[in-house]
Amino acid sequence: MGARNSAGLPVDGETQDRAHRVRAVATAGHRHVSGIPDSSWLRPLVRVRTAGWNGAVTTNPVIPETTVDTAARTADTVTHTATHTAAQQSAHAAGQPAVVQVGIGPVSGSGVLAVARRGARVELTDEALAAIAESRAIVDALAGDTAPHYGISTGFGALATTRIPPDRRADLQRSLIRSHAAGSGPAVEREVVRAMMLLRLSTLATGRTGVRPATALAYAAMLNAGITPVVAEYGSLGCSGDLAPLAACALALTGEGTVVDASGATIPAAEALAAAGLSPVRLAEKEGLALINGTDGMLGMLLLGLADLAVLLDTADIAAAMSVEALLGTDRVFVPELAALRPHPGQATSAAHILALLAGSQIVASHAGPEDPTVQDAYSLRCAPAVHGTARDTADYAALVASRELAAAIDNPVVLPDGRVESNGNFHGAPVAAVLDFLAISVADVASMSERRTDRMLDPARSHGLPPFLAHEVGVDSGHMIAQYTQAGIVSELKRLAAPASVDSIPSSAMQEDHVSMGWHAGRKLRRSLDGLSRVLAIEILTAARALDLRAPLLPGAATGAVHALVRTVVAGPGPDRHLADEIEAVLRLVQSGAVVDAAATQLPGTAAPATKAPASERA
Image 1 (cartoon, rainbow, N blue to C red):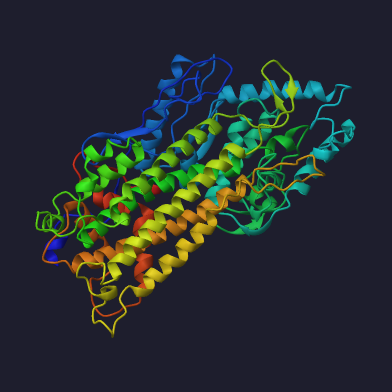
Image 2 (image 1 turned 90 degrees about the vertical axis):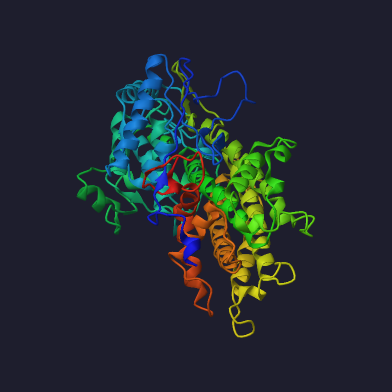
Protein backbone atom coordinates (compact mmCIF):
# COMPACT_ATOMS: atom_id res chain seq x y z
CA MET A 1 0.00 0.00 0.00
CA GLY A 2 3.04 2.32 -0.12
CA ALA A 3 2.02 3.79 -3.49
CA ARG A 4 -1.26 4.82 -2.04
CA ASN A 5 0.46 6.97 0.57
CA SER A 6 2.36 9.06 -1.98
CA ALA A 7 0.21 12.17 -1.68
CA GLY A 8 2.86 13.94 0.41
CA LEU A 9 0.42 14.51 3.26
CA PRO A 10 1.67 16.60 6.21
CA VAL A 11 0.45 14.71 9.24
CA ASP A 12 0.55 17.59 11.70
CA GLY A 13 -2.88 18.74 10.53
CA GLU A 14 -1.90 22.32 9.76
CA THR A 15 -4.94 24.34 8.78
CA GLN A 16 -5.56 26.85 6.07
CA ASP A 17 -6.49 30.41 6.81
CA ARG A 18 -9.76 31.88 5.63
CA ALA A 19 -9.83 35.39 4.20
CA HIS A 20 -12.41 37.71 5.71
CA ARG A 21 -14.25 40.44 3.89
CA VAL A 22 -15.86 43.07 6.09
CA ARG A 23 -18.12 45.88 4.90
CA ALA A 24 -19.47 48.56 7.26
CA VAL A 25 -22.83 50.29 7.16
CA ALA A 26 -22.68 53.64 8.98
CA THR A 27 -25.90 55.00 10.48
CA ALA A 28 -25.87 56.86 13.76
CA GLY A 29 -27.34 55.36 16.91
CA HIS A 30 -27.72 51.73 15.83
CA ARG A 31 -25.74 48.53 15.70
CA HIS A 32 -25.55 47.20 12.16
CA VAL A 33 -24.28 43.99 10.69
CA SER A 34 -21.51 44.48 8.19
CA GLY A 35 -22.50 43.64 4.66
CA ILE A 36 -26.23 43.78 5.38
CA PRO A 37 -28.04 46.90 4.12
CA ASP A 38 -30.69 48.29 6.41
CA SER A 39 -33.42 48.53 3.78
CA SER A 40 -34.42 44.88 3.46
CA TRP A 41 -34.85 41.81 5.63
CA LEU A 42 -34.57 39.61 2.53
CA ARG A 43 -30.98 40.49 1.79
CA PRO A 44 -28.02 38.46 0.56
CA LEU A 45 -26.33 36.42 3.24
CA VAL A 46 -23.04 37.68 4.58
CA ARG A 47 -20.49 34.96 3.96
CA VAL A 48 -16.75 34.56 3.86
CA ARG A 49 -15.67 34.07 0.27
CA THR A 50 -12.77 31.70 -0.17
CA ALA A 51 -10.82 30.16 -3.00
CA GLY A 52 -12.84 27.10 -3.87
CA TRP A 53 -11.55 23.56 -4.17
CA ASN A 54 -11.78 23.78 -7.96
CA GLY A 55 -10.06 27.17 -8.07
CA ALA A 56 -13.30 29.14 -8.29
CA VAL A 57 -14.66 31.54 -5.70
CA THR A 58 -17.27 29.84 -3.55
CA THR A 59 -19.07 30.52 -0.31
CA ASN A 60 -19.04 28.60 2.94
CA PRO A 61 -21.47 28.82 5.89
CA VAL A 62 -19.39 30.56 8.52
CA ILE A 63 -20.01 33.35 10.97
CA PRO A 64 -20.09 36.76 9.29
CA GLU A 65 -17.91 39.53 10.63
CA THR A 66 -19.65 42.47 12.25
CA THR A 67 -18.40 45.93 13.01
CA VAL A 68 -19.02 48.96 15.20
CA ASP A 69 -21.42 51.42 13.59
CA THR A 70 -22.05 54.78 15.27
CA ALA A 71 -22.06 58.47 14.41
CA ALA A 72 -18.74 58.94 16.18
CA ARG A 73 -17.08 56.13 14.25
CA THR A 74 -17.98 55.97 10.57
CA ALA A 75 -15.04 56.10 8.18
CA ASP A 76 -12.67 54.75 10.84
CA THR A 77 -14.75 51.62 11.42
CA VAL A 78 -13.57 49.46 8.54
CA THR A 79 -9.93 50.36 9.07
CA HIS A 80 -10.10 49.70 12.82
CA THR A 81 -11.94 46.39 12.43
CA ALA A 82 -9.73 45.10 9.63
CA THR A 83 -6.54 46.12 11.45
CA HIS A 84 -7.70 44.56 14.71
CA THR A 85 -8.73 41.32 12.98
CA ALA A 86 -5.35 41.11 11.25
CA ALA A 87 -3.61 41.77 14.55
CA GLN A 88 -5.60 38.97 16.21
CA GLN A 89 -4.65 36.54 13.45
CA SER A 90 -0.99 37.56 13.63
CA ALA A 91 -0.90 37.23 17.41
CA HIS A 92 -2.58 33.84 17.27
CA ALA A 93 -0.20 32.58 14.59
CA ALA A 94 2.69 33.64 16.84
CA GLY A 95 1.20 31.75 19.78
CA GLN A 96 0.23 34.89 21.66
CA PRO A 97 -3.16 35.36 23.34
CA ALA A 98 -5.39 37.59 21.26
CA VAL A 99 -7.28 40.57 22.65
CA VAL A 100 -10.88 41.07 21.57
CA GLN A 101 -12.09 44.66 21.70
CA VAL A 102 -15.62 45.03 23.08
CA GLY A 103 -17.17 48.28 21.95
CA ILE A 104 -20.57 49.84 21.45
CA GLY A 105 -20.94 47.83 18.26
CA PRO A 106 -21.28 44.05 17.99
CA VAL A 107 -18.43 41.66 18.56
CA SER A 108 -17.57 39.45 15.63
CA GLY A 109 -18.22 35.76 15.42
CA SER A 110 -14.48 35.19 15.22
CA GLY A 111 -14.07 37.22 18.41
CA VAL A 112 -16.55 34.98 20.21
CA LEU A 113 -14.67 31.88 19.08
CA ALA A 114 -11.34 33.38 20.15
CA VAL A 115 -12.58 34.11 23.67
CA ALA A 116 -14.59 30.90 24.05
CA ARG A 117 -12.09 28.42 22.66
CA ARG A 118 -8.67 30.02 22.69
CA GLY A 119 -8.82 32.00 25.92
CA ALA A 120 -8.45 35.38 24.25
CA ARG A 121 -8.61 38.38 26.55
CA VAL A 122 -11.29 41.06 26.30
CA GLU A 123 -10.93 44.81 26.51
CA LEU A 124 -13.70 47.40 26.80
CA THR A 125 -13.15 50.37 24.51
CA ASP A 126 -13.22 53.97 25.71
CA GLU A 127 -16.36 54.56 23.66
CA ALA A 128 -18.08 51.67 25.40
CA LEU A 129 -17.13 52.89 28.86
CA ALA A 130 -18.43 56.37 28.01
CA ALA A 131 -21.72 54.93 26.74
CA ILE A 132 -22.07 52.78 29.85
CA ALA A 133 -21.50 55.80 32.10
CA GLU A 134 -24.04 57.85 30.18
CA SER A 135 -26.80 55.26 30.52
CA ARG A 136 -25.93 54.72 34.17
CA ALA A 137 -26.53 58.41 34.83
CA ILE A 138 -30.04 57.97 33.45
CA VAL A 139 -30.71 55.01 35.75
CA ASP A 140 -29.38 56.91 38.75
CA ALA A 141 -31.77 59.76 37.98
CA LEU A 142 -34.72 57.38 37.69
CA ALA A 143 -33.77 55.69 40.95
CA GLY A 144 -34.57 58.93 42.73
CA ASP A 145 -37.87 59.41 40.89
CA THR A 146 -41.17 58.95 42.70
CA ALA A 147 -42.69 57.08 39.75
CA PRO A 148 -42.15 53.29 39.59
CA HIS A 149 -39.59 52.02 37.08
CA TYR A 150 -39.38 48.30 36.38
CA GLY A 151 -36.21 46.67 37.64
CA ILE A 152 -35.03 49.90 39.24
CA SER A 153 -37.62 50.55 41.93
CA THR A 154 -39.96 47.56 41.50
CA GLY A 155 -39.92 43.81 41.85
CA PHE A 156 -39.58 41.44 38.89
CA GLY A 157 -41.85 39.36 36.68
CA ALA A 158 -45.23 38.84 38.30
CA LEU A 159 -44.02 41.05 41.20
CA ALA A 160 -43.48 44.07 38.94
CA THR A 161 -46.17 46.08 40.76
CA THR A 162 -44.35 45.84 44.10
CA ARG A 163 -42.46 49.05 44.99
CA ILE A 164 -39.03 48.65 46.57
CA PRO A 165 -37.73 51.41 48.90
CA PRO A 166 -34.27 52.85 48.11
CA ASP A 167 -32.58 51.25 51.12
CA ARG A 168 -33.62 47.75 49.95
CA ARG A 169 -32.68 47.97 46.28
CA ALA A 170 -29.20 46.52 46.66
CA ASP A 171 -30.85 43.63 48.51
CA LEU A 172 -33.31 43.36 45.62
CA GLN A 173 -30.50 42.87 43.10
CA ARG A 174 -28.69 40.35 45.29
CA SER A 175 -31.91 38.41 45.88
CA LEU A 176 -32.63 38.43 42.15
CA ILE A 177 -29.30 36.82 41.31
CA ARG A 178 -29.42 34.31 44.15
CA SER A 179 -32.96 33.19 43.39
CA HIS A 180 -32.48 33.02 39.63
CA ALA A 181 -29.28 30.97 39.89
CA ALA A 182 -31.52 27.95 40.26
CA GLY A 183 -30.09 25.62 37.63
CA SER A 184 -29.67 21.90 38.05
CA GLY A 185 -27.80 19.08 36.41
CA PRO A 186 -24.28 18.62 35.07
CA ALA A 187 -22.11 21.62 34.27
CA VAL A 188 -22.10 22.87 30.69
CA GLU A 189 -18.87 23.21 28.76
CA ARG A 190 -16.35 25.96 29.48
CA GLU A 191 -16.53 27.29 25.92
CA VAL A 192 -20.29 27.78 26.18
CA VAL A 193 -19.96 29.75 29.42
CA ARG A 194 -17.17 31.94 28.07
CA ALA A 195 -19.10 32.65 24.87
CA MET A 196 -22.17 33.53 26.91
CA MET A 197 -20.21 35.86 29.17
CA LEU A 198 -18.59 37.69 26.26
CA LEU A 199 -21.95 38.18 24.57
CA ARG A 200 -23.45 39.57 27.79
CA LEU A 201 -20.47 41.89 28.16
CA SER A 202 -21.02 43.04 24.59
CA THR A 203 -24.59 44.01 25.42
CA LEU A 204 -23.45 45.84 28.56
CA ALA A 205 -21.02 47.77 26.36
CA THR A 206 -23.80 49.18 24.19
CA GLY A 207 -24.82 51.66 26.86
CA ARG A 208 -28.39 50.39 26.75
CA THR A 209 -28.50 48.44 30.02
CA GLY A 210 -27.72 51.00 32.71
CA VAL A 211 -24.97 49.14 34.55
CA ARG A 212 -22.05 51.00 36.11
CA PRO A 213 -18.72 51.04 34.26
CA ALA A 214 -17.11 49.35 37.26
CA THR A 215 -19.50 46.42 36.97
CA ALA A 216 -18.77 45.91 33.27
CA LEU A 217 -15.04 46.12 33.95
CA ALA A 218 -15.33 43.55 36.73
CA TYR A 219 -17.20 41.19 34.39
CA ALA A 220 -14.43 41.57 31.81
CA ALA A 221 -11.78 41.00 34.48
CA MET A 222 -13.41 37.74 35.52
CA LEU A 223 -13.25 36.54 31.91
CA ASN A 224 -9.62 37.60 31.59
CA ALA A 225 -8.70 35.80 34.81
CA GLY A 226 -9.96 32.54 33.33
CA ILE A 227 -12.66 32.24 35.99
CA THR A 228 -15.53 30.20 34.56
CA PRO A 229 -18.73 30.01 36.61
CA VAL A 230 -20.24 26.55 36.95
CA VAL A 231 -23.45 26.72 34.92
CA ALA A 232 -25.95 23.87 35.17
CA GLU A 233 -27.46 22.13 32.16
CA TYR A 234 -31.07 22.84 33.11
CA GLY A 235 -32.71 26.10 34.10
CA SER A 236 -33.28 28.26 31.03
CA LEU A 237 -36.59 28.53 29.19
CA GLY A 238 -35.08 30.85 26.59
CA CYS A 239 -37.38 33.75 27.40
CA SER A 240 -36.47 36.74 29.49
CA GLY A 241 -33.22 35.40 28.15
CA ASP A 242 -31.17 32.54 29.53
CA LEU A 243 -31.96 33.55 33.09
CA ALA A 244 -30.58 30.75 35.25
CA PRO A 245 -27.32 30.30 33.27
CA LEU A 246 -26.61 34.02 33.22
CA ALA A 247 -27.56 34.29 36.89
CA ALA A 248 -24.91 31.69 37.72
CA CYS A 249 -22.35 33.93 36.01
CA ALA A 250 -23.61 37.01 37.84
CA LEU A 251 -23.57 35.11 41.13
CA ALA A 252 -19.87 34.41 40.68
CA LEU A 253 -19.31 38.11 40.02
CA THR A 254 -20.76 38.86 43.44
CA GLY A 255 -18.43 36.33 45.08
CA GLU A 256 -20.95 33.53 45.54
CA GLY A 257 -21.42 30.17 43.87
CA THR A 258 -18.84 27.85 42.37
CA VAL A 259 -16.39 28.39 39.53
CA VAL A 260 -13.63 26.60 37.65
CA ASP A 261 -10.42 28.61 37.87
CA ALA A 262 -7.74 29.01 35.22
CA SER A 263 -5.98 25.85 36.42
CA GLY A 264 -9.13 23.76 36.06
CA ALA A 265 -9.86 23.47 39.78
CA THR A 266 -13.46 23.76 40.96
CA ILE A 267 -13.48 26.19 43.89
CA PRO A 268 -15.77 28.76 45.55
CA ALA A 269 -16.13 31.96 43.53
CA ALA A 270 -14.89 34.10 46.41
CA GLU A 271 -11.60 32.17 46.52
CA ALA A 272 -11.10 32.44 42.77
CA LEU A 273 -11.76 36.17 42.76
CA ALA A 274 -9.37 36.73 45.65
CA ALA A 275 -6.64 34.65 44.02
CA ALA A 276 -7.00 36.76 40.87
CA GLY A 277 -6.85 39.99 42.84
CA LEU A 278 -10.49 40.81 42.16
CA SER A 279 -13.19 41.97 44.57
CA PRO A 280 -16.82 40.80 44.61
CA VAL A 281 -19.27 43.29 43.11
CA ARG A 282 -22.16 44.69 45.16
CA LEU A 283 -24.85 45.26 42.56
CA ALA A 284 -26.74 48.54 42.30
CA GLU A 285 -30.17 49.35 40.84
CA LYS A 286 -30.98 47.66 37.54
CA GLU A 287 -27.69 45.73 37.38
CA GLY A 288 -29.10 42.36 38.33
CA LEU A 289 -31.54 42.42 35.44
CA ALA A 290 -28.91 43.69 33.03
CA LEU A 291 -26.63 40.77 33.85
CA ILE A 292 -29.19 38.01 33.25
CA ASN A 293 -31.68 39.23 30.65
CA GLY A 294 -30.38 38.08 27.27
CA THR A 295 -30.21 35.30 24.69
CA ASP A 296 -26.46 34.99 25.15
CA GLY A 297 -26.33 31.30 26.04
CA MET A 298 -28.32 30.11 23.05
CA LEU A 299 -26.53 32.58 20.73
CA GLY A 300 -23.15 31.39 21.97
CA MET A 301 -24.10 27.79 21.23
CA LEU A 302 -25.32 28.82 17.77
CA LEU A 303 -22.02 30.53 16.96
CA LEU A 304 -19.96 27.60 18.22
CA GLY A 305 -22.22 25.16 16.40
CA LEU A 306 -21.96 26.97 13.09
CA ALA A 307 -18.17 26.93 13.28
CA ASP A 308 -18.19 23.18 13.94
CA LEU A 309 -20.81 22.48 11.29
CA ALA A 310 -18.80 24.28 8.60
CA VAL A 311 -15.99 21.77 9.16
CA LEU A 312 -18.32 18.78 9.38
CA LEU A 313 -20.10 19.60 6.12
CA ASP A 314 -16.79 19.75 4.29
CA THR A 315 -15.94 16.45 5.99
CA ALA A 316 -19.25 14.96 4.84
CA ASP A 317 -18.40 15.84 1.24
CA ILE A 318 -15.04 14.10 1.67
CA ALA A 319 -16.64 11.01 3.20
CA ALA A 320 -19.17 10.86 0.37
CA ALA A 321 -16.42 11.10 -2.25
CA MET A 322 -14.48 8.27 -0.61
CA SER A 323 -17.64 6.15 -0.54
CA VAL A 324 -18.36 6.90 -4.21
CA GLU A 325 -14.93 5.49 -5.04
CA ALA A 326 -15.26 2.53 -2.70
CA LEU A 327 -18.64 1.61 -4.24
CA LEU A 328 -17.47 2.09 -7.84
CA GLY A 329 -19.78 5.05 -8.30
CA THR A 330 -19.67 7.71 -10.98
CA ASP A 331 -18.64 11.34 -10.76
CA ARG A 332 -20.80 12.37 -13.72
CA VAL A 333 -23.73 13.35 -11.49
CA PHE A 334 -21.66 16.08 -9.81
CA VAL A 335 -20.85 18.15 -12.91
CA PRO A 336 -21.76 21.88 -12.76
CA GLU A 337 -24.15 21.62 -15.71
CA LEU A 338 -26.44 19.43 -13.62
CA ALA A 339 -26.06 21.55 -10.50
CA ALA A 340 -27.03 24.65 -12.51
CA LEU A 341 -30.41 23.10 -13.30
CA ARG A 342 -31.34 23.39 -9.62
CA PRO A 343 -29.87 26.68 -8.38
CA HIS A 344 -29.52 25.98 -4.67
CA PRO A 345 -26.10 27.39 -3.72
CA GLY A 346 -25.35 24.79 -1.06
CA GLN A 347 -26.05 21.91 -3.43
CA ALA A 348 -23.79 23.44 -6.06
CA THR A 349 -21.02 23.87 -3.50
CA SER A 350 -21.15 20.27 -2.31
CA ALA A 351 -21.37 18.93 -5.87
CA ALA A 352 -18.29 20.96 -6.82
CA HIS A 353 -16.48 19.70 -3.75
CA ILE A 354 -17.19 16.03 -4.45
CA LEU A 355 -16.29 16.39 -8.14
CA ALA A 356 -12.96 18.01 -7.23
CA LEU A 357 -12.26 15.37 -4.60
CA LEU A 358 -12.71 12.60 -7.18
CA ALA A 359 -10.42 14.20 -9.76
CA GLY A 360 -7.75 11.81 -10.99
CA SER A 361 -9.29 8.75 -9.35
CA GLN A 362 -8.16 5.56 -11.05
CA ILE A 363 -11.04 3.79 -9.36
CA VAL A 364 -13.69 6.06 -10.88
CA ALA A 365 -11.97 5.97 -14.28
CA SER A 366 -11.86 2.17 -14.24
CA HIS A 367 -15.59 1.86 -14.83
CA ALA A 368 -16.36 5.12 -16.63
CA GLY A 369 -16.65 3.59 -20.10
CA PRO A 370 -19.77 2.54 -22.01
CA GLU A 371 -19.24 -1.05 -20.95
CA ASP A 372 -20.15 -0.17 -17.34
CA PRO A 373 -23.52 -1.89 -16.68
CA THR A 374 -24.48 0.48 -13.82
CA VAL A 375 -27.17 2.93 -14.94
CA GLN A 376 -27.59 4.92 -11.73
CA ASP A 377 -25.92 4.99 -8.35
CA ALA A 378 -27.94 4.72 -5.15
CA TYR A 379 -29.50 7.90 -3.80
CA SER A 380 -27.07 8.02 -0.89
CA LEU A 381 -24.28 8.55 -3.44
CA ARG A 382 -25.70 10.69 -6.22
CA CYS A 383 -28.01 12.76 -4.02
CA ALA A 384 -25.33 13.63 -1.46
CA PRO A 385 -25.02 17.23 -2.76
CA ALA A 386 -28.75 17.78 -2.28
CA VAL A 387 -28.68 16.70 1.36
CA HIS A 388 -25.31 18.23 2.25
CA GLY A 389 -26.23 21.37 0.33
CA THR A 390 -29.50 21.75 2.19
CA ALA A 391 -27.53 21.73 5.41
CA ARG A 392 -25.20 24.37 3.95
CA ASP A 393 -28.10 26.62 2.98
CA THR A 394 -29.67 26.13 6.41
CA ALA A 395 -26.37 27.11 8.00
CA ASP A 396 -26.24 30.21 5.81
CA TYR A 397 -29.63 31.32 7.08
CA ALA A 398 -28.65 30.52 10.65
CA ALA A 399 -25.51 32.64 10.20
CA LEU A 400 -27.69 35.54 9.07
CA VAL A 401 -29.83 35.20 12.20
CA ALA A 402 -26.67 35.00 14.31
CA SER A 403 -25.33 38.19 12.73
CA ARG A 404 -28.55 40.03 13.56
CA GLU A 405 -28.51 38.76 17.12
CA LEU A 406 -24.88 39.81 17.51
CA ALA A 407 -25.99 43.30 16.52
CA ALA A 408 -28.74 43.36 19.15
CA ALA A 409 -28.76 45.03 22.56
CA ILE A 410 -31.06 42.80 24.61
CA ASP A 411 -32.24 43.78 28.06
CA ASN A 412 -35.53 44.51 29.80
CA PRO A 413 -36.04 47.29 30.50
CA VAL A 414 -33.66 48.96 28.07
CA VAL A 415 -32.23 52.49 28.13
CA LEU A 416 -33.04 54.24 24.83
CA PRO A 417 -30.86 56.94 23.24
CA ASP A 418 -33.38 59.66 24.17
CA GLY A 419 -33.17 58.72 27.86
CA ARG A 420 -36.37 56.72 28.12
CA VAL A 421 -36.26 53.40 29.95
CA GLU A 422 -38.74 51.06 28.29
CA SER A 423 -39.93 47.52 28.88
CA ASN A 424 -39.88 45.33 25.79
CA GLY A 425 -39.99 41.76 24.52
CA ASN A 426 -36.68 41.61 22.68
CA PHE A 427 -35.42 38.94 25.07
CA HIS A 428 -37.64 36.26 23.52
CA GLY A 429 -35.32 33.68 21.99
CA ALA A 430 -37.59 32.60 19.12
CA PRO A 431 -35.30 33.69 16.24
CA VAL A 432 -32.30 31.85 17.64
CA ALA A 433 -34.28 28.85 18.88
CA ALA A 434 -35.82 28.25 15.46
CA VAL A 435 -32.52 28.13 13.57
CA LEU A 436 -30.95 25.92 16.23
CA ASP A 437 -33.79 23.49 15.57
CA PHE A 438 -33.39 23.85 11.79
CA LEU A 439 -29.72 22.93 12.09
CA ALA A 440 -30.46 19.84 14.19
CA ILE A 441 -32.78 18.61 11.43
CA SER A 442 -30.10 19.05 8.77
CA VAL A 443 -27.47 17.40 10.96
CA ALA A 444 -29.68 14.34 11.39
CA ASP A 445 -30.26 14.13 7.63
CA VAL A 446 -26.56 14.35 6.75
CA ALA A 447 -25.76 11.66 9.32
CA SER A 448 -28.56 9.42 8.07
CA MET A 449 -27.19 9.50 4.54
CA SER A 450 -23.66 8.81 5.78
CA GLU A 451 -24.86 5.72 7.63
CA ARG A 452 -26.58 4.45 4.47
CA ARG A 453 -23.37 4.75 2.47
CA THR A 454 -21.48 2.85 5.17
CA ASP A 455 -24.05 0.07 5.23
CA ARG A 456 -23.80 -0.26 1.44
CA MET A 457 -20.04 -0.83 1.64
CA LEU A 458 -20.60 -3.69 4.10
CA ASP A 459 -23.28 -5.55 2.12
CA PRO A 460 -21.81 -7.87 -0.55
CA ALA A 461 -25.07 -7.70 -2.49
CA ARG A 462 -24.60 -3.94 -3.02
CA SER A 463 -20.87 -3.27 -2.64
CA HIS A 464 -19.75 -4.40 -6.11
CA GLY A 465 -17.27 -7.04 -5.09
CA LEU A 466 -16.20 -6.08 -1.59
CA PRO A 467 -16.13 -8.88 1.03
CA PRO A 468 -18.98 -9.07 3.56
CA PHE A 469 -18.51 -6.39 6.21
CA LEU A 470 -15.01 -5.81 4.76
CA ALA A 471 -13.90 -8.76 6.90
CA HIS A 472 -10.33 -10.06 6.50
CA GLU A 473 -11.34 -13.72 6.87
CA VAL A 474 -15.06 -14.00 6.27
CA GLY A 475 -16.72 -16.04 8.99
CA VAL A 476 -13.86 -15.76 11.45
CA ASP A 477 -13.76 -11.97 11.34
CA SER A 478 -16.73 -9.60 11.60
CA GLY A 479 -14.98 -6.61 10.05
CA HIS A 480 -16.93 -3.36 10.40
CA MET A 481 -20.28 -5.02 11.10
CA ILE A 482 -20.78 -3.52 14.55
CA ALA A 483 -19.34 -0.14 13.61
CA GLN A 484 -22.41 0.27 11.43
CA TYR A 485 -24.56 -0.69 14.42
CA THR A 486 -22.95 2.19 16.29
CA GLN A 487 -23.75 4.51 13.41
CA ALA A 488 -27.35 3.31 13.36
CA GLY A 489 -27.74 3.90 17.09
CA ILE A 490 -26.36 7.42 16.80
CA VAL A 491 -28.52 8.25 13.80
CA SER A 492 -31.59 7.05 15.66
CA GLU A 493 -30.74 9.41 18.50
CA LEU A 494 -30.12 12.26 16.07
CA LYS A 495 -33.62 11.80 14.70
CA ARG A 496 -35.02 12.20 18.19
CA LEU A 497 -32.84 15.27 18.75
CA ALA A 498 -34.25 16.74 15.53
CA ALA A 499 -37.64 17.12 17.21
CA PRO A 500 -37.93 20.89 17.69
CA ALA A 501 -37.56 22.40 21.13
CA SER A 502 -38.87 25.77 19.97
CA VAL A 503 -42.50 24.63 19.78
CA ASP A 504 -42.53 23.28 23.33
CA SER A 505 -43.57 26.32 25.33
CA ILE A 506 -44.48 26.00 29.01
CA PRO A 507 -45.93 29.03 30.87
CA SER A 508 -44.08 30.34 33.91
CA SER A 509 -44.04 33.15 36.49
CA ALA A 510 -47.73 32.99 37.38
CA MET A 511 -48.68 33.16 33.67
CA GLN A 512 -46.92 36.52 33.21
CA GLU A 513 -44.32 34.75 31.08
CA ASP A 514 -46.88 32.62 29.27
CA HIS A 515 -44.87 31.79 26.14
CA VAL A 516 -41.19 30.86 26.04
CA SER A 517 -38.73 29.84 23.31
CA MET A 518 -36.83 26.89 24.80
CA GLY A 519 -33.86 28.15 22.79
CA TRP A 520 -31.33 27.02 25.40
CA HIS A 521 -32.58 23.46 25.04
CA ALA A 522 -32.39 23.76 21.25
CA GLY A 523 -28.75 24.79 21.65
CA ARG A 524 -27.98 21.93 24.00
CA LYS A 525 -29.41 19.33 21.65
CA LEU A 526 -27.61 20.82 18.65
CA ARG A 527 -24.30 20.37 20.46
CA ARG A 528 -25.14 16.72 21.08
CA SER A 529 -26.24 16.37 17.45
CA LEU A 530 -22.99 17.77 16.10
CA ASP A 531 -21.02 15.35 18.26
CA GLY A 532 -23.11 12.50 16.88
CA LEU A 533 -22.58 13.62 13.28
CA SER A 534 -18.83 13.74 13.77
CA ARG A 535 -18.88 10.14 15.03
CA VAL A 536 -21.03 8.91 12.14
CA LEU A 537 -18.71 10.57 9.62
CA ALA A 538 -15.65 9.14 11.35
CA ILE A 539 -17.04 5.62 10.97
CA GLU A 540 -17.85 6.22 7.29
CA ILE A 541 -14.32 7.50 6.63
CA LEU A 542 -12.78 4.58 8.55
CA THR A 543 -14.90 2.13 6.55
CA ALA A 544 -14.28 3.82 3.21
CA ALA A 545 -10.52 3.83 3.83
CA ARG A 546 -10.61 0.06 4.37
CA ALA A 547 -12.72 -0.41 1.25
CA LEU A 548 -10.29 1.68 -0.81
CA ASP A 549 -7.47 -0.59 0.35
CA LEU A 550 -9.44 -3.51 -1.03
CA ARG A 551 -9.76 -1.83 -4.44
CA ALA A 552 -5.97 -2.00 -4.95
CA PRO A 553 -4.06 -1.80 -7.21
CA LEU A 554 -6.36 0.98 -8.41
CA LEU A 555 -5.68 4.26 -6.61
CA PRO A 556 -8.14 6.88 -5.36
CA GLY A 557 -7.94 10.53 -6.34
CA ALA A 558 -5.21 12.72 -4.93
CA ALA A 559 -7.51 14.38 -2.39
CA THR A 560 -9.29 11.26 -1.20
CA GLY A 561 -5.94 9.48 -1.25
CA ALA A 562 -4.53 12.11 1.06
CA VAL A 563 -7.35 11.50 3.53
CA HIS A 564 -6.78 7.76 3.22
CA ALA A 565 -3.09 8.30 3.98
CA LEU A 566 -3.99 10.43 6.99
CA VAL A 567 -6.24 7.69 8.35
CA ARG A 568 -3.41 5.22 7.94
CA THR A 569 -1.22 7.34 10.23
CA VAL A 570 -3.53 6.48 13.14
CA VAL A 571 -5.17 3.20 12.06
CA ALA A 572 -3.54 0.17 10.42
CA GLY A 573 -4.78 -1.22 7.13
CA PRO A 574 -6.91 -4.35 6.57
CA GLY A 575 -6.18 -7.39 8.69
CA PRO A 576 -7.74 -9.64 11.32
CA ASP A 577 -10.25 -8.05 13.65
CA ARG A 578 -8.84 -5.52 16.09
CA HIS A 579 -10.29 -3.42 18.91
CA LEU A 580 -12.45 -1.24 16.68
CA ALA A 581 -13.58 1.32 19.26
CA ASP A 582 -10.04 2.69 19.57
CA GLU A 583 -9.81 3.07 15.81
CA ILE A 584 -13.12 4.90 15.64
CA GLU A 585 -11.94 7.32 18.32
CA ALA A 586 -8.66 7.90 16.49
CA VAL A 587 -10.43 8.87 13.27
CA LEU A 588 -12.96 10.89 15.27
CA ARG A 589 -10.11 13.07 16.52
CA LEU A 590 -9.03 13.67 12.93
CA VAL A 591 -12.57 14.68 12.01
CA GLN A 592 -13.17 16.98 14.96
CA SER A 593 -9.78 18.71 14.67
CA GLY A 594 -10.36 19.52 11.00
CA ALA A 595 -7.36 17.42 9.96
CA VAL A 596 -9.47 15.46 7.46
CA VAL A 597 -10.50 18.65 5.67
CA ASP A 598 -6.93 19.94 5.70
CA ALA A 599 -5.55 16.70 4.29
CA ALA A 600 -7.91 16.87 1.33
CA ALA A 601 -7.24 20.57 0.82
CA THR A 602 -3.50 20.01 0.36
CA GLN A 603 -4.24 18.12 -2.86
CA LEU A 604 -6.89 20.38 -4.37
CA PRO A 605 -6.20 23.14 -6.91
CA GLY A 606 -6.92 26.71 -5.94
CA THR A 607 -6.72 26.06 -2.21
CA ALA A 608 -4.73 28.46 -0.07
CA ALA A 609 -1.69 27.05 1.69
CA PRO A 610 -2.08 26.35 5.40
CA ALA A 611 -1.27 29.46 7.42
CA THR A 612 -2.15 28.66 11.02
CA LYS A 613 -2.26 25.72 13.37
CA ALA A 614 -5.61 26.71 14.85
CA PRO A 615 -8.05 23.78 14.75
CA ALA A 616 -10.42 24.08 11.82
CA SER A 617 -13.35 24.11 14.24
CA GLU A 618 -12.09 27.44 15.56
CA ARG A 619 -11.94 29.20 12.22
CA ALA A 620 -14.36 32.00 11.59
